[in-house]
Image (cartoon, rainbow, N blue to C red; front, side, top):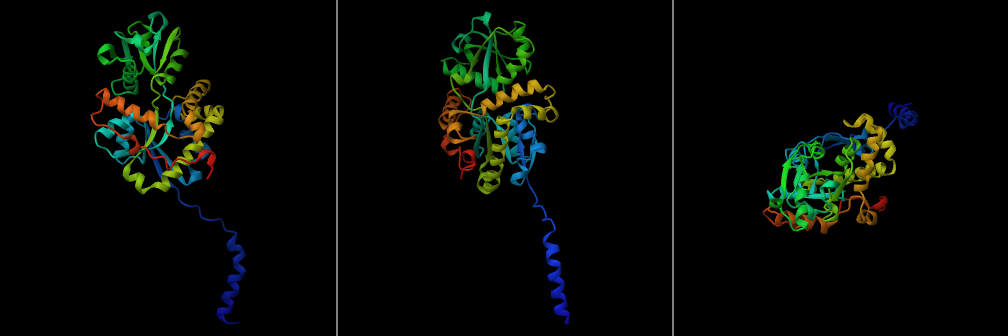
Length: 333
């Protein structure tokens, strides 16, 4: 037998063995989210990645950079620390007004989660009743402040018509102590306050005046133009994770115990997760799928911010919102 024939025979004999070797795993694409918060139970669908692997299934190694507000999320992304920002419309408007080239690609929470809370004894039952009242906000850079201004604007009031006081994250304490007539908050903040003894209050929902979304996924225009396949995979994985948390809130609440920094109480986790699930769903998303935008609300929000003097330039949201990367409803082609 020639040397060539011997090599051919050896190769043929080895082929069945070679085909049984495990395929080498494809490397995952690292993808970093800049968040507005610490890793809290509200975002358990992201924190559950080590347990559920929604992003790994799409070829993504997920990372999360915490932040202190939506503006910080955008700044961390612009500084190159993240690929995408988990931020709010107000922070988006402010960044666009400064000339940043940004694109909104997914509507995380289409329902507005901000409110104003007042003791029933105060007589405050509607936004119009806030005139001349002392109202607490987390900070002047927070969504509580910005959404309070939006609420006032919808009933013909402005900042000059009320007394806005910075009360910090524990702003329910001065309300309960009678130092404030009302306080601006979020649905989860109100939930925790009620668990700690707050009762007999009226709640004025901002969404009843203007249902401005609470949070969006935002990227730079350059990222949108150059990384569309990766962004589409990320959004598909995020949609899957959000759908899981909506379908299985009890499982998410159990996972939050070990994954969220505020998740020790499973029952509280479940209440918070149910609130966040509710804010993920709107008539538009029920028709068209999770992540879809209500462009009219976003445009009205931008126009309101300009009317309030919070931004100087007009913003055409049809040029900012891009829906082409949002996964189809129910995974349909």
